[in-house]
Length: 100
Length: 488
Image 1 (tube, rainbow over the protein chains, first blue to last red):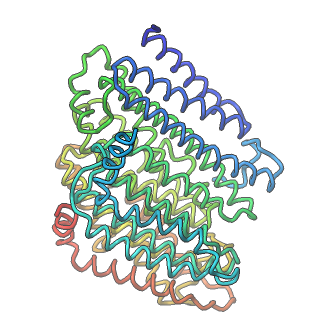
Image 2: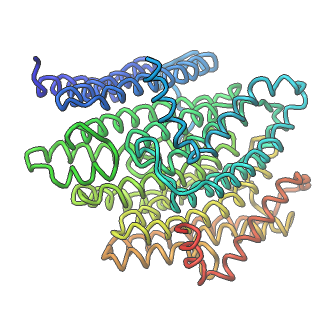
């Protein structure tokens, strides 16, 4: 059986990649994917902890988070499409009408 | 298998009496979308607004009738705090709906989805007020937020609205990723069996020092994720843009109802929930509150857009309200925050009603647009002055009493430096609120005649102004009253 620490390390790496992606990449779609990575890192944590401690609650939470992620992506993609129709771009650096 | 299904059904139905308002909202909002919308012609969608107001009134009555208790595997808790903040959410939502009608009519953008999304978002808030488990807190927070992402980008023909929606969405999704990762760490640190706040608090207080890093980073991430939702510095970047780009009633919505719900969650998670590990979060939260007061007030000074000004001022007000979360006494803290939030919602509603009136067709929301309002519209300008002075916390207006109880509580709990910062920044706040008042009274108006105001807007402004004045008159008794309402 894989040790808990190994799974936690992997999930931490996933989470870091997600955060770095959100902060570095400028494409709205890729930022969305990086957010999904962060959510999946949390899912991995939930499942690892649940399995390690013999509880099922964490596995249920992971399922719920997946459901939430689907809803979030649906809304997010719709917003990005609306943005693309208006502005012909999905680069976050180009959306700068509002500032101050 | 049937036994399992039966058990599941029993477990779900056993506690439904605790969430009747939410169920009612979800069912009616769904029925509004289908088949309700089929009964209205394209030109009569504005009729959904009064229907929504009726639904909100019924919801408020249902909240009043819901008994106290805890249910759904102790994920939802109905008590005085829940009920008090739920009422605030309904109040803020009702004001939003009332003020939406005229603006959306002018823009020819009336749809049923607008009102249904507001109701879905409200049901999320009602869950959030009573969430006594990190997981239920997370999902109700997201139910509330996802609907608001769409509402911010509602005017999809307008670039600023879509831009505001995308910015809010990306940062909101980012923060929810951080929040859920923090929850997963706390879940693990507490032994991987529960995310219930009371159990979590007990388990975390007993954790060996080796897993302290886990607890610390978990608590910090939950704090960051929630600070994003209330737009506290340094997690406020989305809020001025989202406030400016959103349709103005939605701006008002974001400034009132979701803030009340998110602060209720703050009070539950930090004030009452995780006090066993308060050494981990008190200092970061102090910095967040202080930075919100300073940056919110100082940045508001140089704003030219009224909506941005109100956005920064709401950041500052959140800073003040976090003082109530910090106070070690959850009950007194909740009462002070509730009272402040009530007064804040009323005066904010009034101020936004005036902004919406001046906007007419949705343009021209600069502070300069207020010049000469005292000459053109004496009554309106007087009401606006009351709201602004009250927002500034100038005695003896209602806003002053809200601040007074919060600051008194913070001093009693020993947060002297933070309260000093709060007092000094309030003075800065008075400067920019008075700037708008000066525009109204000491500048000559432009030649254009005053447009008539919608009946609902007149009603909202009058009620809000009357409430602020009544609250001013009975200020000293307000906190006792808040104690009665919030903790029956």
